[in-house]
Image (cartoon, rainbow, N blue to C red):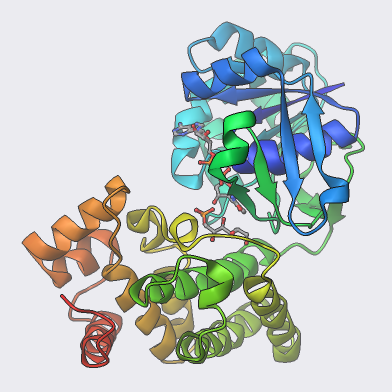
Length: 390
Ligand SMILES: NC(=O)c1ccc[n+]([C@@H]2O[C@H](COP(=O)([O-])OP(=O)(O)OC[C@H]3O[C@@H](n4cnc5c(N)ncnc54)[C@H](O)[C@@H]3O)[C@@H](O)[C@H]2O)c1
Ligand SMILES: O=P(O)(O)OC[C@@H](O)[C@@H](O)[C@H](O)[C@H](O)CO
């Protein structure tokens, strides 16, 4: 029995690889970055640090990685696997479809079930892969794809964070993770059975779970991070205790909870309780997480379907004015970080082409539409407060 994990980054190593190792399941990472793949093969092991519960720290041993430049070996690994996970980032899913299709075609010869589980913060990642496979798979493997391949989603609630410089010197593959162990997976799209993986929880009524998590937890992370960055914070939990940020955060929770409970027909109280678990996590000092990690790649995080603009649009659809989400978006538009190429590009667009260009080309909004105007009014408000000084 074996599994394959596309990606060998923080979630791949710090959650999926960790759970598979604890379950005694053999697995192979498939990594785009050759240097990272080489490092994994050279060292063959890495440490997972459980934040606030070091008794549970774990050395994951016997690990190996294939590079994207080894398509034949990747095809073989997928053909031998029972389950394929992806943790590459939603925007990179298109970069793995060719390899995945080849693997499925090879696996078709065996006629055995294969499940593919996305582990991404993204809108409908399983559907993206399903559509791509439907289009790419050769005629001979089409029936196999239909009857024996499940393409489904997991919701990743554990945070996996880069470790401290000192520890990285000893083990460059080390990952710091939240003391959280459950991996919910949409059961309705599976083909046959999954291997017995510690923490994996099959959820029959999955509808909207990923969207609820994305537009609650990640919208909240974005809010705290982009406002926190403006106010000079470095760590997430510190920013999540600042009363000025909390006021916006509580408003964001109210807005998203109302829309999500209406859309997915959950009682509002249940959705509000979910927001409280998000707030507790954000404020947990044991989870040493950084504004920079959470704010990183603002071009993606300001995208039309992503955590802030996506949730603001959803909120509007349900007749609610996304006042607080618009404040968070205004802060994100002004995110600066010279060491992040995506933040540098955002700054360039903002300064050279103007706010409307950010709203149109980054956020996919009409700059003079209701949300566009609301965001611009919040930018003015943040300037008046002295939070934006540009
Ligand atoms: N880190 C977290 O706390 C966390 C929590 C929940 C969900 N997620 C989600 O998990 C996914 C992975 O996040 P992560 O934090 O592990 O990121 P990461 O950057 O640490 O890892 C992503 C890995 O994918 C590799 N990759 C594979 N194919 C690629 C391609 N075609 N182009 C570019 N890179 C490619 C990268 O080289 C990198 O090693 C994302 O969708 C993220 O939103 C992360
Ligand atoms: O992983 P990203 O870059 O999509 O987003 C950064 C964080 O919001 C994210 O990793 C959360 O910590 C994680 O989704 C757990 O809720």
